[in-house]
Image (cartoon, rainbow, N blue to C red; front, side, top):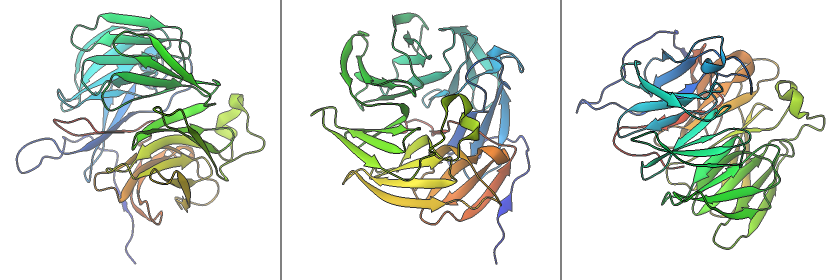
Length: 341
């Protein structure tokens, strides 16, 4: 029987292709509470290689607290928004800081528009847009949340949050609120085949919105904890965490706090079932999730075990375990192009 490979917590350089370009990698900030102090660390995993840890801000302070970083594939830079209101720019190859600038207080979520013109920073109460080159703020809106997704053109961004009753569409670069949709509790968002998938952490319902028609499909699953409480999420027995999309966008996957990866079809807007990730005995809470190049394997954090595993999405079989590596929001990065969601 083939044993799962365990990687030691070692800092090494990026894996290189024969052409000398950086191979695909997965990056994510280490877990931190919604407010206050954070560890100030980013995990960087060159696919198939060994992980390394990159530092930002000050560990044990609000400047070390980030939730979802943005990755600039053109310049191989990571934009790390923090609760302190400072966004750090870190070179993904060297791990060295390239700069920092002031952004909105409490903004722990960032994303770069598909046209590479804008950096969006989101807090629980506000959305801000900054010119990627000059770092000048273009607009500030009283639209908060913890999840955002662009349409492929980058002309619009959709914003949602765990406590919100609507999904808000904002035009770029105008900052004008275009529309609001009755999509509740968007714990995370993903774009697939012209539609937005929105995960409801509380009810286990996946909402699928067609922005062109306004049609919403509600898909029920068993990822529900009847005793769920927003103030005690770490104690939850079920609930959606991060969403991830297959390379051709035919499938959407969700990490569940029940220890399962849930699968959805973006072609038929249907639920395809769940796959258990047997990381160890007892409850295993899945949080951060990414689909690796090729679409057959996933990269998922087991939050309660403080480790991340590489699994087959079809069976849940674990191929590699990375102890000490964890994130609530993984981002797949590759040189020279933007990974589509």
